[in-house]
Image 1 (cartoon, rainbow, N blue to C red):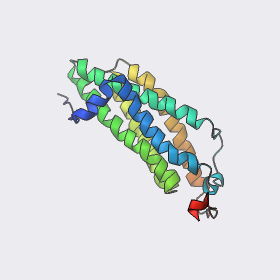
Image 2: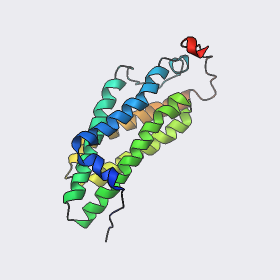
Image 3: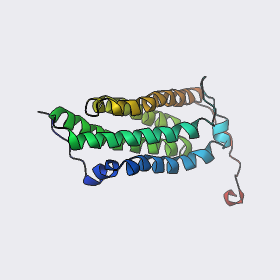
Image 4: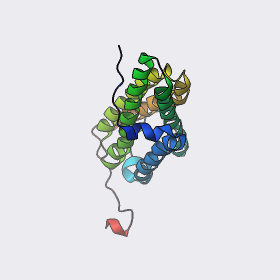
Length: 191
């Protein structure tokens, strides 16, 4: 018989309310994205070779909040399934899906500091690949317990992660062995 996985109560209480369920990933995404926005204007990033099909920089700040909103709502649906389901298999999938949700959220938040902060494109590619695989599996797990509703929320996120992993992989591959340009100070504080 499938077993329900233990999840600390706080991680169930947050997504129980739809506002905090959506607010958590939006807030974490905003904090993670703040450093990324600044780094996108750096000489290092501007001089990276990128694979074909890269979206304009203006697309990313529009797409990510929508995806954070939808993933947060999917976590709310998972908790609702956990609260209302009587089918043991659904309880197990919902609890495991919720555990994967928080793990993927941590990987998502870590990607920006790894890629932009540490400039470790290969390590960021590993993070992105793990993140995409985890979200694909989480989407599959939550499909039954949420009666496909979480899947509708998570499919755009899954597709975007596949695209983002392609971009990350292309950047890593196209820039192997290239020396980054010397950074110029952004302000008087950097001197």
